[in-house]
Length: 536
Image (cartoon, rainbow, N blue to C red; front, side):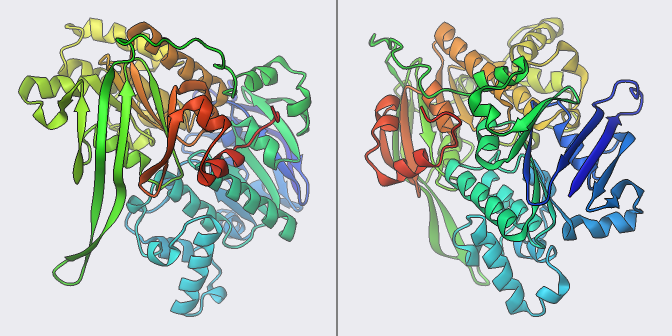
């Protein structure tokens, strides 16, 4: 079906240094091939070169791509435009930047269908609703008239998947399609892609940094590093043990379920002192209708949540997209006003902090956002973004001191000191997330609200970031509220876990108890949906 031969890609000014170097591989009819590698390995550029959707500056300097005998590199712009959608569907990595913010979800999905499929308004609604339900969006009848900003990160990704699958293409290119999804929807999407592939004999090129996901969906796996394929074979090589040291390193970096078992946990009263106490938190959003926008009801995003976070501990807040966990985190950081309830920091209500105390509170409780790109000013250099908080909080008095501190932080999160002068658009999704973590750490917080901080990171960098956070916690006694859908990360990082569904906590307790012996059926569903390579 797909034949890629001697593909080479470079950027102007560095044509001698190829980001993709003489790459050759194939995807057979009805085959799912996973292209696995870290951020910057060239896997996304490889995928985007096939439908000729390379970013500005990237240049194909050699090779050929054939789809069912068609030479795609010889097509005119109009010819390749017709191929996209009808023969090649693409699921992009970042749904936030791929969806039009001023057009409804219904219109964006309907534009992907063939005109003869949608002859009436009723046809449009029926097909769009079906598409949304197929990718796990409940209450599709209500959601289809909404706009992208009204969806969570995971739900936006589901919309992108619905658009890509609208015409049932011959080849589906999925560029990290499950990165922002919770485990149950991830499992659903993987099953959906696999069922459509089997039903329509569709070929799939699946780009991912998650080896467990690759193992779940792929027939073959290609491991990519620095623009080259270093290992390939049947997907079972991931279970049996790959031969290349780099592939083994990726496997070893996966968050293990048992890595912290048996670790002695201190019970010292000072260490276990309560630093954050959330009592009966409610965040309701009004539903307004009519000419005068009368409130006719409320969306109860958070509906009576109580949490305790102890000094030097990690509390994981787990649940599906839309359950209210991100809203809870934003309410704690006071980016969203709570409707009812109280939030105490070191025994004092947040509302009682005034003046200089309120300013200092901003440095003591920081957040790492789920979507790194939208949380950074695109016109500011990375060094300025990271040092901005230090300047406001008067940390590191001189510019040179702040510069030196930023370089240290960049190194800590796996970037280079020279990245100081670059802009956000020059980095991959995973690299941008590392920058956001460095920014949060710059003001030396005591509490860090981490909203899916590793969701877009490849496994080795994820391991590095998690190890860094654990090191900082040990050295500085930092406390973490870890909002995540990754159960492996929960098992690795957390001391306690709270499982959230429909705005309420349905189960909570010590992490080893909840993960080993869940009491609620919903918790069991989450655990069953986790992709694993090894059964143990």
